[in-house]
Length: 118
Image (tube, rainbow, N blue to C red):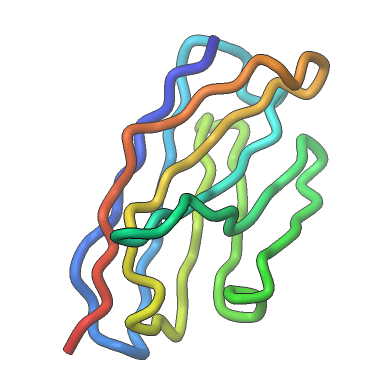
């Protein structure tokens, strides 16, 4: 089962940008569909974006046009480029890996905090 470690979070002003990274180990990265989720204080965890094993992407309406998910199978890493950040993007961001052939096999990272504030 794959192990995931997120990085790249921090404090940024509204309108700014951040790039999150999620590094995977312990399994064949290219076999996994990768996704980003986020959880704001007092709210449920919500889906942000997904990238398939073939690099097809999907986004939640709240981030479409501002966030870009990508993957580098050579580096076993998935990225989330976040532009035009808003205070409502403040949350802990988590990456998730789902094994394509066996969707019941999945892993979560520990999360990275993103705070958008002036």
